[in-house]
Length: 234
Ligand SMILES: O=C1C[C@@](O)(C(=O)O)C[C@@H](O)[C@@H]1O
Image 1 (cartoon, rainbow, N blue to C red):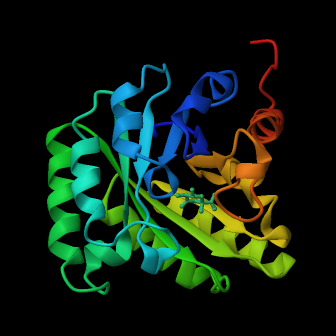
Image 2 (image 1 turned 45 degrees about the horizontal axis):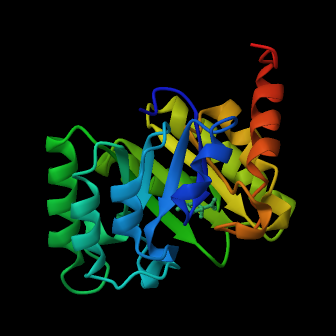
């Protein structure tokens, strides 16, 4: 997974998979936003592979912090799960007590099961300058199979910084996924795949966006394929 760009339908409801199938390559299952996520996983009989995310509260999610690892470990036993998201701060140990050992053990389990590890970083306030973004991407990519960075754009220059950092990190050999949150950075979701970003996130139904500035799934698919010049009939 992630040899090429993967468009995920980001959702808390696996029942949406049938509607996502036409446009998405995978589903990001936001376990922290879902009701009874493990029951949903057990009942899942969709076609799209799953990226499971159980975002910690200290990183903008709603999961019970250390408790989320139990649910993630159970999720990794599901055949449908092809990738798991882990926060860089958890792996690097500058997160709350106990995170590092849990995150490392989860990554070990994922590797044993041949499940890809997406190591993520979020900045809900701002977008640092490109050099700092490249450093974050290099750190995240070194800890897993893909280093993912989502920052908040408050001006067009922030979007430009993210595009530049995507290009530089990819040119340096790091496998990354990048995007800006917020209106001025919205277009980065369509454009960074041209510079190497490997994952896109979009809601099937715009009312259920999992981050500010996401395009609806069908729209992002059209933008990414259109900018790449892919033939829509193929
Ligand atoms: O980390 C990410 C990226 C994201 O925050 C976005 O900006 O699209 C959406 C989240 O669901 C996902 O886990």
